[in-house]
Amino acid sequence: MSTLPDTTTAARIRGPFRLPLIAALALAFASLALISGVAYIVVLAGATGTAERLLVDRADSVVDNQVALVRGRLDPVTGQLELMAALMAAGRVDVDSPVNVREALAVMMTRVPAVSIAAFGTLDLQLHRAVRHPDGAITRDTIPLTELQRGLERFRQLQTSHRTFWGELFWSDSLKQPVLNVRTPVRRIDDAFIGGLVATVAVGDLSALIGDPRHGGDGRYFILVDHDKVLAHKLLINPASFNLTEDRQLPSIKELGDPVLAHFWDSPVRNPRIDRALGSLGHIVEAEGRRWVFVYRQLEGYGPKPWLVGKYFPIEDATADLDRLMNGAIVGAATLAVALALAILMGVRMARSIRTITTAAEAMERLEFEQPMHKRSRLREIDDAAHSLDKARGALRWFGAYVPQRLVRRLMEAGDDGIASRRVNLTVMFTDIVEFTPQAEDLPEDQTAELLNHHFALLGACIERENGIIDKYIGDSVMAIWGPLAGSSDHAAAAIRAALDIAKVIREDNAVRRAAGKPPIRLRIGLHSGPAVVGNIGAPGRINFTVVGDTVNVAQRFEQLGKEFMGPDDEVVVLVSGATLAMVQDKASLGLDLPPPERHQVKGRDAPVEVYRLV
Image (cartoon, rainbow, N blue to C red; front, top):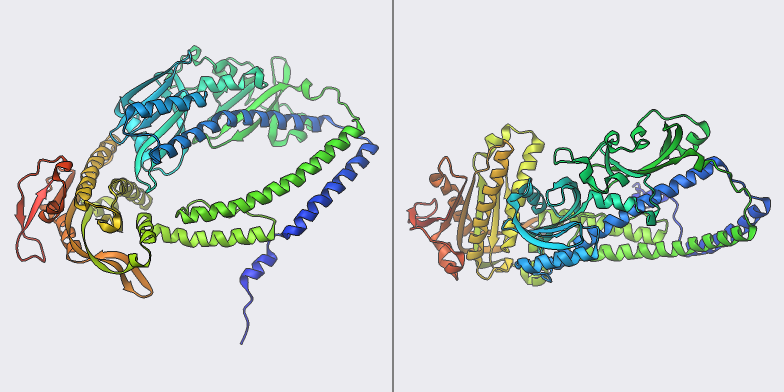
């Protein structure tokens, strides 16, 4: 009988060399002594510099400072927006009070001077804003989202998003200039969407930052986007002078009025020594009778297109006389400090790696599986632990993709008793897109998947907002339940509210689709309440925690019954059984004028059942 090799062990042997933790600490202190000794030997032999080395050093420093300026201005905006979203999600800011929301936004703006407008979009399509004016005053107002160009479209993007992101530039009528913008959805702990936050940074403010002499600005810094469009420059501090509009938001390098920057994309002037030193860090051009060195770096993460951040300076600045000899004691002391810093850095990185593992375990406990948790480490013990944890996360991520997180949390709270099959009263919803199959046949596979994902995201937001649980997706259909397991005390009323919300959202989404030249989505919804069996159903090796029984069958048949009610111009039909309305504890809370019921024969029932059409 042959013995197969341990593939895991073999992979580790073939992988990159990793140090034990004790060896790493010993190596750090040994390196400290070695580097110090070598440094003093180098000092005794003398040190020389070259124009090429100085140029690279300066280029690195110039671009690093510029990138740090930009990040230092924009990253706090992201941080404050995410903090505000967390406060809203936790109920620390009352999102139902426009006054409280506007005041909270104004407070956030006082903490981050870069923000020109902070706003919060609500589910009733209102936008609460705080606006900073040129004199520093902050005003507050509320406007309908529909009054803003593409306002509803951007809000729907937030409604289906689960992360913070920087969007494309858009024009601000109140500031009369283009603005950068960062957006984040606000979701409760159960992932239900309750609104969207946005903060903007005016292009003029960004230009003022990079041209500020206190930060090393001298009018030669720039940020380009989309090849030759100027996003930031000293001359853009007051964008009004360029007569910018929504259709022409940024000037080109030729239109800006900087005679040197206008030649940025000219054919480079060749200089073998400097070209070799600069590499991909920059190039040289000739303008205004002189040669100029451009240094730049690509910066991503602040919009759909990368930025080119850089500066230019006369070539004479890089080729001035160099100091070839340095004081030995200073160099030695500096080298020793660098060695000590390296030892400290290694200890910090070790602590950070251990903290990463702890954070990953905490995220798994919260059922958060999307972000990779394993970061490669040269330390064997830490790398092994992180690798094992990441493999566990990968397995649990697949589990989380197929089982609703709300259901998992409820089962975790209930313990072993939560998975035992039992009979309970609940409400079941079925939805179905009308004539989806022929519509999908005309679409490529990726567009079909995109359409369904968008549709399910809209429905899921409405269902989860009313504490419902999506049991399964069946093609283009959704089955959802409300009841004790979902934490719904008045499950019938919650299901009806969810159905009405879905009808509203579908109509709003259809308006956007029509504007884009796409056919509307037509939807049938059926609701029925009654007893059903809840628990683990299936063979021992493949089970589902689901709901079965006559109540489920009748709910599906109510959805099918919608064919008899739906007219050619109807976008949504919502049918509710008399049994569901009978279980509503507070009918007045629905705010509905119920129509008289109709009686229809439903398959599987001997007697006709009461049917109410709510939409």
